[in-house]
Length: 331
Length: 281
Ligand SMILES: Nc1ncnc2c1ncn2[C@@H]1O[C@H](COP(=O)(O)OP(=O)(O)O)[C@@H](O)[C@H]1O
Ligand SMILES: [Mg+2]
Image (cartoon, rainbow over all chains, first blue to last red; front, top):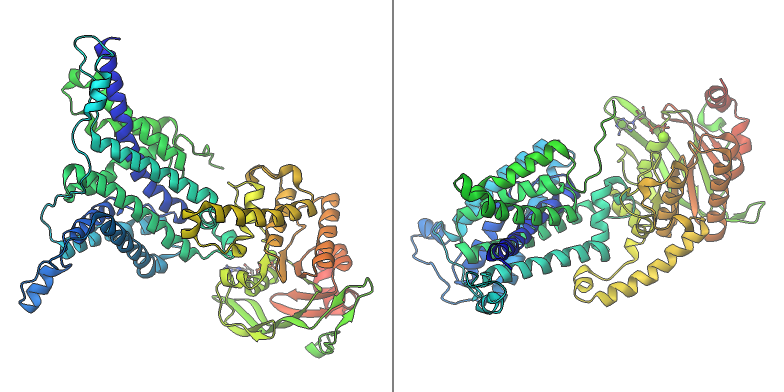
């Protein structure tokens, strides 16, 4: 096999792994949008906030310490302990569930029945609030998240694949952290699907996504389901935040991963779980392949815009997304 | 004609009795006292009182816009009346949200069908069992076995209802693809899956052909007879109402203008003028 072809395969593999992460982030949007019609602009900031909280808890930081010091003239920063990663992840998850509850209780409960654009605006406010809250609780310096996950290229894969091609092929370069991230993302996606298909609350969630009146009539509390979907979105944000944070540090730019989910949603449709998955994979593979093949001819850096152009083309020819029902306007 | 001249039958004498076809009617299950419901300046329900007795089929009739659906919505908690009291099973019910009302054993269907269009018939009916599924989601997510067991038990009940309503052939069909008449039947099935004490049916036969209406009438009678379910239904077809119901409430412009057995109501002059006259012009 020619080296070019094999490197092409490597690009596809890397694209698939990126795609899984895009799909995961997109799922966070889909969960909330399906159940409540809210397009959650704060999804990216939720990932940032989750990662910040995880680092803070692991390092034993005292939340709001800067504020406390300002007011009381104290000089506290740390509890003086370190929390093991797994426990810290569990605690962070609790924080995200509390956040979900608070969002429902103090914000969206009072906005039931409002226009989608109002709900969307509310999530913009929420995003800025949460960003500020993250700074206030944990400080605004860049943090490193060290979970002890494997880093660097996988030697095993490189060596095993090296003799697939000729002399100018040195084996697949696959980042270990990317592999871990994909595996975790795949497990989470499968778990979310199983949850929604086979559990009592999963069925209730689908019911609410389909028809609020009917859901009420069989005894489903909309409030509860909305807290549930925001909690699940918080879980997705946590995983995405952890994986991205472990790779490139926990800082503001982490919240921009949400921007990667937008084209995925345009491709896959805002209400389709399979759509988010397939859309994520198409965009992940598409942008890496495009960069590999066409990129060098047009000066590279195509990954910044390729996904959006692809999504725009999709919007023109198939506005309902890959799996959406055809939209037929009645006149 | 004033209230006292309206024929009243078992309302006052609340001893149990047995109907001509052998069904047992008990005491008052749902008591609505002086209900008034307004939408801004519009009075949808104007100081209406009536009750529903254990085991009976209670019809609510009246011209379009009379406030019948609003009344069902008050009973099921979808609307909160500005005035009046709702007594259920001998207790005054506080202001209660619809999902809580449903959990108290009051199931309903909607005039404009509210089904989960994207789900299969089976899944739709299964949602009616949600309140029988006790295993929490944490337990379910960790140990799928308990979820499976629970699912099996509830599936059994659902299958019984499917057989009962003769919809075996469409079990796996997404509801969105069903014709109107079958959708109405699936909606009834979902309500029945909750094993309600009180079943509220808002125009269960509207838009059906004669044959479908006969089927639906038979199902309603069978539900009442076999499960002893108390039923309140809104229906336009006077023939159907006369055949099915034990007692009838007649509404017009938000007011109650008649209350009694089908025969009593049929011979009530005010009812004839307000309603029967309208329906035959
Ligand atoms: N949610 C609502 N908001 C405003 N007006 C309503 C609402 N529901 C019902 N109404 C009004 O209340 C009156 C009674 O309606 P309804 O109970 O649906 O009558 P029926 O079922 O007897 O045809 C109508 O004038 C209707 O327009
Ligand atoms: Mg009506």
